[in-house]
Image (cartoon, rainbow, N blue to C red; front, side):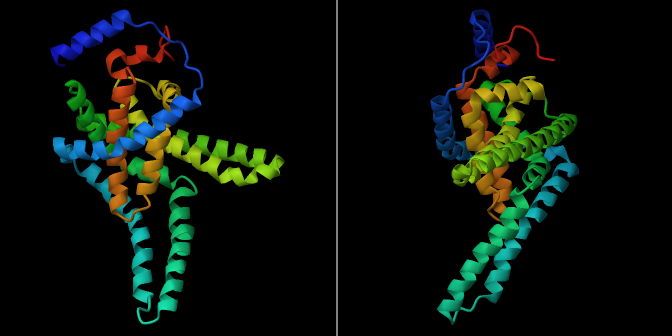
Length: 290
């Protein structure tokens, strides 16, 4: 740890007054959401400037196997497009236009439904945890000068944690979706709002799974992580939205989604939160959460 950062950390801890619990602030969450979205281009430049991919392959064959598995799933989307191009008739504009419509319908019924109608997006994130793990930790190291352990066992621990977080996010997403369906079933005149609410919940929990990697680096348990994330709903929702959309891009999007969103979320949390300075004290609780 660099001396300047250590001095800042000591000062902050000595002068910090716990804020037990932040109130729900939709305006603040909106600002977080906007700030996170605008952080995506700088995150991409940060990746290139600092060559964050360096050292990635030290995690061994397991990491490569997981990425290959994720890519194979991503190829499903590519196969839809290839099949369309093979069957399109360039000599008949009307038929070509109809084929475009069929492609869109097939993409959203087969591809979109396959990826996002259930647990598949979390399966993808679990398979790609090695990317989130590596790029998030490299970013924290560059920002703070505090190099964390990143051995194979650390990756295994992070992988197990991501499985737990993925299952939790999926279950919570199902619960909220059922609640929304019941609510909008009772108030049928508001039923047109249901897809937007369900989509927002999906974005938040997908983003939380990404954000948890940042929290993990500062010693937060999964329970502490999900409590702390409630202070940064806008950050998680924006990260989840971008990951959601990028994963729809065949092959390349599967790799880009965890890399870009993990780096962007790390940059945003470094600026907005005090977790990198205060550790668990940033939770604003007098005793450790069990």
